[in-house]
Length: 386
Image 1 (cartoon, rainbow, N blue to C red):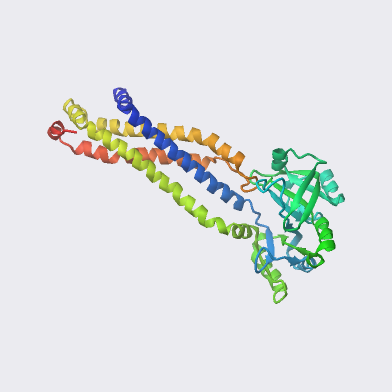
Image 2: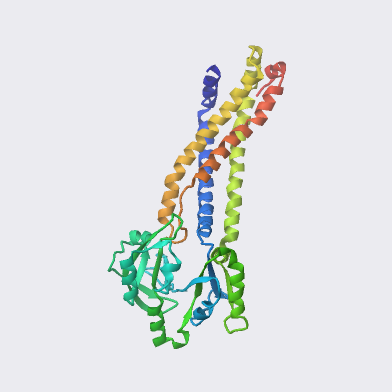
């Protein structure tokens, strides 16, 4: 108990220095948590991809489209359970800052292939029976206040003109990682409008989504699909949905890798801050440690004093930073455009990693001053002038 009291008194002896050290640790922990949250949110978007779905796109690039007629040919390949397709629409709702995915889909098969988008039977029927209908995710319905029957005006960019979609359904995400920030409307409605203005662009889709019966056959079926359209005017590239998502996000991989590296560099910064504080404290108390040794204090007591002080300051700063991270990350989540990340919150893994790092740093920062204090002879300690 006496050692505990000494630890607390030593920790608060230089209040300003202790406060600045705790504040520095808290800030670096916040930075660490925010960066790790971005990384885990990014990974979650990839991990949410189904293993039993394949994506077939144009072999050259995502921006090139595929003929609608490919669907019937692909359906003849053994092992395929269902096929649907999508087409990126883009467009602007209100202004360019209001971003969420707007995609034309096959109204008859899309929700069969994507069971994680939960839609009532009645809403699904209403969606199919109304040509300019749309289905929106629960997240953007909440954000913008969309209700069944509302009209959503979209200013086209890829497909010019003013488009108006009637909300006929609001889908709920099945899992936490399911994206609930998308708008789906009938491909038929888009194709009919294109035929009137751009007949050459009609009858084309962006990509096909193929649901397979056995995910272990993904590679074989992918090869069969691509072989089917080899040497055609629109050759294909088929891959698992996860590979497709990773490829789509490839342009950001270098940024995510850098953020991952920086998050661990921050751990080193905390160590330097904490180490500097403890070295200064131990230097100032060299004569005090000599007195304690003279009074019969053993190396274990010195260990308890230095390690206890280091852990106390480190843990207080870490806990403070951790508690501040929750509202900060919540604020970031509310201000980033919907649809960039399916989920954006502080996961238990990041919390455990942050706490473990803070404890580790508290221990490591005490190693050098502890070694110095234990090796210094009593006579040398009394002679020391700090």
